[in-house]
Amino acid sequence: TWNGHEFTAAGSYTAHLTNAAGCDSAVAMTLTVNVCNSFVEVRLNIQGYYDTTSNSMVAAWYNQTGTGSATDVDSVTVEIREAASPHALVATAKGMLQTDGTMDSISLAPLSGNYYIVVKAKGAIETWSADSVSFTSGGTTVYDFRNAANTAFEDNQAEVEPGVFAIYSGDINGDGNVDPSDYTDWETDYLSIDNYYGYRASDLNGDGNVDPTDYATWELNYGNLVSAYIY
Picture: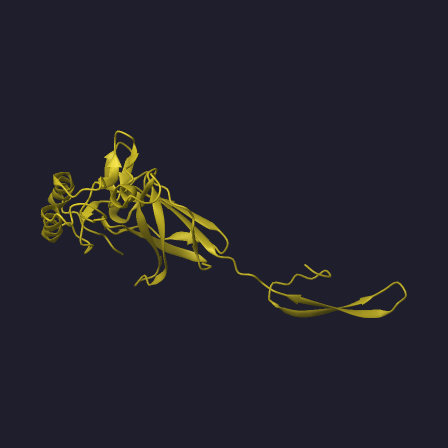
């Protein structure tokens, strides 16, 4: 508000004022409107990394790479997609998932309206939010997948302990299905001295090794016909 008037658009404005002596003077104002970024905080668990003893995930990134923090789980891709079909990609960013299921706030271009949130992680099933969620310019949208299966589209999560949910593991090749092609990738890494250790999608439990415990996670979800549900 300036000189009794409200301005919302950028531009140059002039007001004419009269002083006590009756003289007229012109006052100029240049208004700049700054558009603020939107922010998103996504919270989730990854099934294979979840440890029921500690009630948290293991530090898979730290175990597999030997770098970063002892609470780093993995780099997770967060996509923002239009609510209307065909759900065009609006923004994408990466964040480091922590053992407690949180990630730092991710800065996006200014958004206004409702959008789907999609999360992708190595060795895990692509998972969409159950519905589109509201974003505002300058605001922070928080979305938590951990507390109920129905926070994901088609309830597509595993209950890793009572009341705690996680996106499915086992999609080693990232094609949206837990199937024999993922087993082939696991077997290749398991049998190779060069691939047995390190940052591998086939290390489904995040302990830094490709071994039969990872196979057990794949087998469980293959038997349950786990696949991605995409709008």
